[in-house]
Image (cartoon, rainbow, N blue to C red; front, side):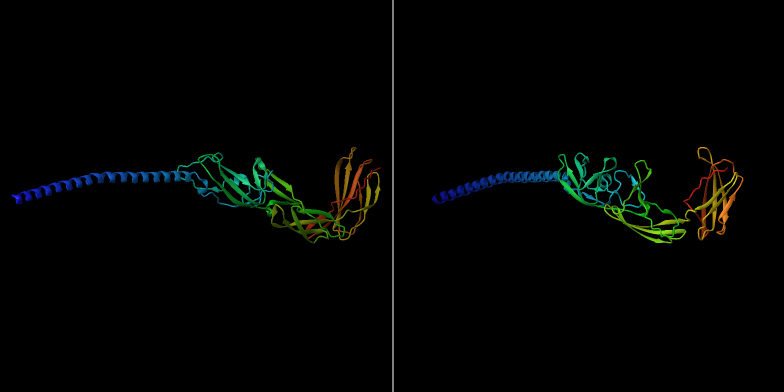
Length: 356
């Protein structure tokens, strides 16, 4: 009996132990999904927070103009010397440094969907030595400058500085109007004229204008002369080196026209309807032209008659068939032919006879 009772007790204990183990396993199994769910929730929350942080950072970067790669695709401009007058110039020039020309070379890349209003959200400013020119536009002076780009309104932020250079105005021959011909009367001395250089430009109406350029202030000049003493045509080589707000060297030529000097009338004998004129001969002349001008009561010229004496042997002439009691103006033009061209005096010595 004792043996049977012992066996039964052992069986009960075994069955009870199995039940308790199973219950414990069930409890552990029930707790495990709950723990995993909480962990998963925490992970998703962390991911969401990270995404929001990145989105916020990306949104902030999108409006930070320092990240838009602002730059000038051209960083050197030419100074506009006639900034207050010139709309354009005649020579070939680099782009003139003025506000609109510089701004149109600004380049940048904004993020998709971001569209700032230039002039409101983002402004431009040229820093450096500037002056006001045509149409109240800013014209930077020669030298180094900075283009300042600034975000003015939220959500835009940041500022960018871009350097650029303005070079002096490069003068070319096409820019200049040159006083190309100078006239003289022969006196046996060499002629060494100076020449006026003017800057050509077009104004706001498109009309051609000129502006005087001054030696020593705008340029230094040298002259080299040839055939500048005898009657005929000489030349001058003009070399102008520009300075200050201008640059460049221009070489051009000018003419020197030397005509015979004035001819002196040495004797004038007047008759009723005639007059005899005698003059002092000039060496090397090809001939003379005697001008007889009939004058009116107010000394206005009524009629002019020219008498040509070829060669240099004769130095007198008798003029007939004139009107009585009439005032005349008389002078003698010497002329000389040089290389197929005739040079005639440009200065005269007059006589004012009156017929009897």
